[in-house]
Image 1 (cartoon, rainbow, N blue to C red):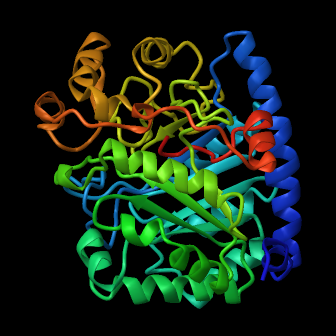
Image 2 (spheres, rainbow, N blue to C red; image 1 turned 120 degrees about the vertical axis):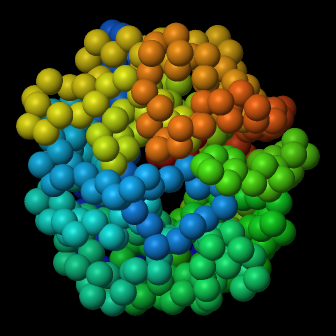
Length: 392
């Protein structure tokens, strides 16, 4: 079966919303972002919202920490963020957690903003038939289901039971409801053999998955598990797999790390995307949990306007690295936070001090540039930010 056949097998309304809200509006929105960027205006191309920090799993290296009662972003504040995006021509929003399906108003968000497109980052354990049916009814959501390992590794990586089979079931449920379904894998030492295998990609394709999004494992949270981080040779292996795989696999392979020419970049440093945590604080990205600015419910003034913190972050990262500063120089994050008197938004009092002691690790900026070989991917990466970049 080809990509085309898997796409045609999805729901007609889902295809229409994807092509219009994500495709056409996404292209126009990115064009507006480029014009803003040339004028030095700060609003990102798209936004990522963690609607809650609550979760039913405890994954290795996850940045989410709950201190006391979990945060659930109020519906009014979520609507403020989305409406602000629309005013700037941004109709795409990534919905993260924790586990976002734990938010009681999630379906109302999708229903209210039918002119937008949403990517739902989920561990899949709560993606039931009724949930998938609601997503199909709305038509403007693509579930991105995390897949972290085989039967043995998945339970260890995710801190749960029978996770592999529950993930497979979530994929089958989403596909059977004819949703545009994606799978994400955070590539680390314990799952790299699975992730970079023909068997894995072909299995997902045969299940009806349309796109596969590869991340690089970024150690964070209270248990960062640094030993799982990839070394330089493994990152190079991942890059080669993506470039070669895009010439032969019948599935869209996504990364948010390298340009068409193979040069590394950081989406947050380019101002393409930032992360709004469940308490409403605007962080550079999910794993950099420091903030100065905060979303206010009903406030029509964009929280990005006049943010010296975010502006300086973008400028300093461009001077420092094209890779990931959290991995290459974690102590810098603490120094930058202190410079701006930024708030520690991690719910971990020891967060900044721990960064000072963290090991230096290679990132996607640590390997030679390997240009894309597939002309479709070259075109996509040159005309729009291909990969959407929540964790870039």
